[in-house]
Amino acid sequence: KRSIRVAIAGNPNVGKTAIMNALAGTTEKVGNWPGVTVQKKVGKYNFRGVDVELIDLPGIYSLTSYTLEERVARSFLLKGDYDVVMNVIDVTLLGRNLYLTLELLEMGIKPVLVLNKADELENFSVDSKALERILKLPVVTVSALKRKGLEELSETLLRVATGGLKPEGITPTYSEDLENAIELLSMKIERLITEKNFPYNLRWFVIKLLEKDPEVTEEAKEQLKLPQSIFREIEKIEEFIKERHRCDLPSYIARERFNLASQIARKVIKSIREIPKERI
Ligand code: GDP
Ligand code: K
Ligand code: MG
Image (cartoon, rainbow, N blue to C red):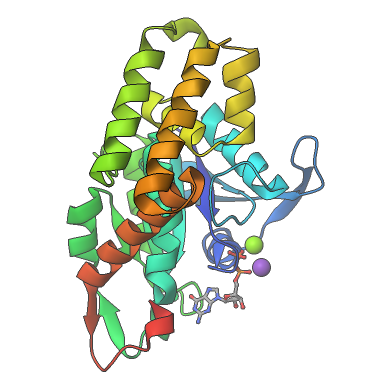
C-alpha cells in the first residue's frame, strides 16, 4: 500500500489534535462533516514511503446517537472508509476513556490504543503490555507534548493498516442477565435478516436496540421492517431488568460498560503512590 487512512477517535481533550500536529506538523481544515457544522480536519505526512492521512473525528464520550458529534463519528466509523482506527486515550483518565474503547470493540472495530499524556503520570504507571493482553489490541504509550512514542505509533498504525499486524480484539462481555438478553434477541433477529441488507455487527446492533438507540431503532423499524414482536421482546427484557436491577435498560447497559472499563483500568494501573480516586 502506498497510502493509508487513519481515523482518530477519542474523548474530547485527550490530545487528538496535538497528536495530529506532532505526527503531521500541521493540519488542514477540509470543511465540515456532511450535514453538520462540526469542522473536519485532516493531517498528512509520509512515513517510510507511505502517505498517511489522519482524519480527526469529533471528540465523543460514547457512541450513542444522541449528540451531533456522536452521530458524525459513528456514521464515519460504520461506513469503514479508513484502514485503521486510532483510539486516543488520556492515560490519566484511563477508566473513563476505556468506555469508548469498549464501544468500538462492540462495533467490531479493533483500534490501535494510544495512551497519550504519558508525561503527566506521576503517582501511577500503566502496564501497557497487560492492557494489550486484556483487550487483545495494540497499545502505544505516547506524549504528544514531549514528542515521545511517535515513531512507534506510526509504525504500529502502518503495520495494522497494511495487514502485517491483525489485532484480535475482545468482544466485551457483561453480566449474565445482559448476555442472556443479547443472545435471545440476536437469535430472533438473525432469522429475520439477510446479509445483503444488514451491514452491521449483529451483537452491536442488538445492544443498540436494547439501549433504545434512536437511529438504530428507526432503522430496525423503517428499513429492516423488524416485526412488532421484537420490540415487545425488548419491553419484556426491560421489565425484567427493572425488577432485578432497579434501573432502566439503557442505564443498566451503560453501567455494565462503565464497570468493565474501570475493572480493566484497575488491573493495569500500578500505583507508585496512593492514587486519588477521581483520577481513575
Ligand atoms: P483533542 O480535543 O482531543 O483534540 O485534544 P487537544 O489536542 O486539543 O488537547 C487537549 C489538551 O491536552 C490541550 O491543552 C493540550 O495542550 C493537552 N495535551 C495534548 N497532548 C498532551 C500531552 O501529551 N501531554 C500533556 N501534558 N498535555 C497534552
Ligand atoms: K479541544
Ligand atoms: Mg481536537
